[in-house]
Amino acid sequence: MAQKQQARRSKKAPSPETGEQAMIEGIFEGSPEAVGVAVIRLDCGCRKMAAIDPGGDPASKIIMYRDNAQSICDQCKGDHGDFQRIVKQFINWKKPEPDHVTMTMISAKVLGN
Ligand SMILES: [Zn+2]
Image (cartoon, rainbow, N blue to C red; front, side, top):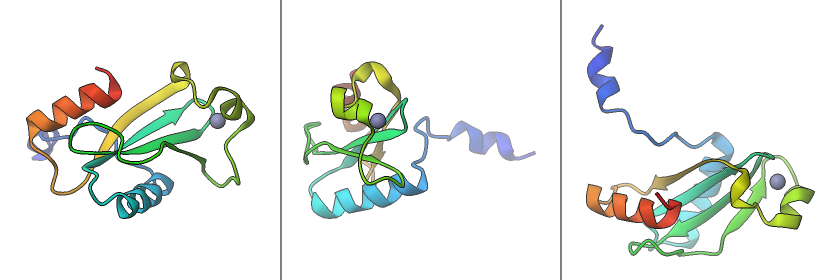
């Protein structure tokens, strides 16, 4: 019954899956200046991730990985995760999250919309 108020505050960004969460924590450890990690899910099941600095620029190398696999798939080895195969992309913000204006600016720069 009181669910509606909660829904209004819902974040549009999906939450990371367990495997992604572990990667994200590792990326934050390696890039302490990062304000967030961009998570890009590809249609083959591989993931691309990169730490984002406060200016919306990459704060780390782009990391590609595949859950429960030693390496990314052959398709990704060929096209490096072409943007046409992206099924979902979002930024996992570090807590405390940046202010709304900063988040919007960074999202636009990183995700391109
Ligand atoms: Zn792949």
